[in-house]
Length: 412
Ligand SMILES: Cc1cc2nc3c(=O)[nH]c(=O)nc-3n(C[C@H](O)[C@H](O)[C@H](O)COP(=O)(O)O)c2cc1C
Ligand code: SF4
Image 1 (cartoon, rainbow, N blue to C red):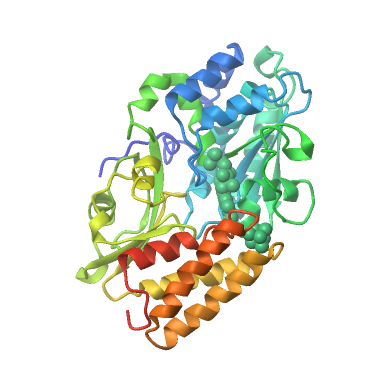
Image 2: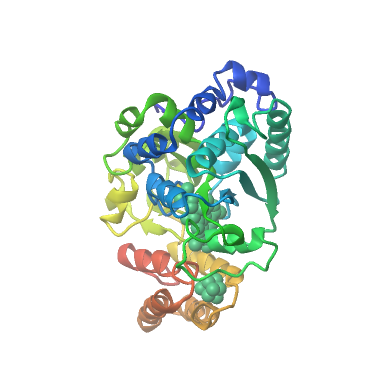
């Protein structure tokens, strides 16, 4: 299957621990040029490219960058925060970028920092990602030694340093506002939106929060231009996306392809088909906070917009494949256990609701109980309408999609 690599362009081509390799491949040349261009033109390039956040929500990256820059044009303190918490089950794309091309992430972050006028950046990496932490730490040191990080970068007036902070295994700390609380050294409880981070983020200052994969697209967009980028992939979710494929396929793994690829292509061309010659039953798109689909969705082009039109989600690009012998109910049950475990307990609808969902799942697992299935969906809807943060709003996604395409029942 033909890959188009942007975030993974250097994978296997350079030694990740060598800044020389990165420089020889043309690395940091875009940053050197970018710091001579006015930030407004760069913002426009990201906007026109149509880059959408790759952390899960698919929010337009250019719009966010513009808000962060203009929310306080003269603020001396602004921040860029890279979300490398990668907590969504089944997702392992950011790890691949950090382990194989850490300087690409730094270059993307520095360009983003220059655009919004930030002089400090933080990369929030999940603590279990030892190799990523080591590679990114080494890259930061190398960049500092060469004054690519620090004062007056490439002789310009732009100064910026980047530090790493470690997450401690909380799924909720990947949510951007909770992440900022954690970065400030506080307990991982979410903040109420608004204000958004662009206005009042880290330490109360304007902050741009982007995912690793999003930032890894910045250098190519600035180098090749918006027109080049938005001709790749689908019209409303242009570019490439890294998909991580797990479950019952012959060749699980990751790949970077243009958006618009179909599930059928991912399973049968890249994944080598369903394991042991069995039949495809379901895919869970986007991790625990994702949506189930059946075979009727195998040919839908995968993009944020195309899936949203069908009430589905692309999320982080994690795709878990189930075969004819797997139980969607069982996978759903696991996802709901995960939400209960990760609920921070701050608000009642989610704290009590997550427990209630598991009680209902127990009833469903004991015997066929259509009333419990109905109650499961109702409860999740109430949670979505009343919970404080997106975690409590998430269980409805796998529940409603499982109910739409499958029979939620013990014997299923
Ligand atoms: C419970 C929860 C967990 C999340 N975990 C992550 C994560 O691990 N990594 C990530 O990039 N975004 C995560 N997000 C999304 C972030 O809140 C945010 O949308 C993202 O970092 C913004 O970056 P982007 O615009 O580049 O996608 C999570 C969201 C929620 C609600
Ligand atoms: S929705 Fe859940 S995770 Fe979010 S604040 Fe409420 S209890 Fe905490």
